[in-house]
Length: 80
Image (cartoon, rainbow, N blue to C red; front, side):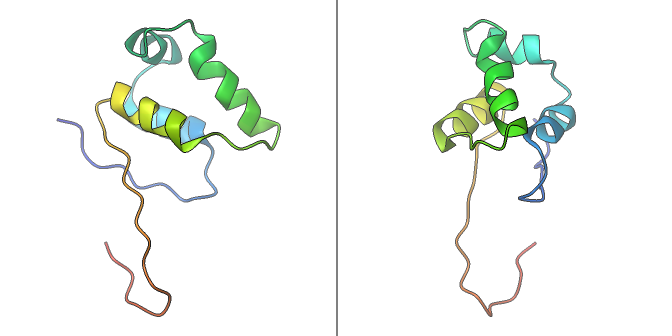
């Protein structure tokens, strides 16, 4: 079972891929798509365009994770 990964919100998606230990081609295979299914969103990010939450959820699932986003009220203690 993979261990949880915490990323800086400003970190590139490519750093997530590095932490999963999976190659882009392996993720594409798990997503049942061509390599572009992984490389196109990475290119979008490099160009300053946003990727979708749907894509991030699919990527997390293919890598054996679930995507968890928390909304924490300002002023509350930072969770770990």
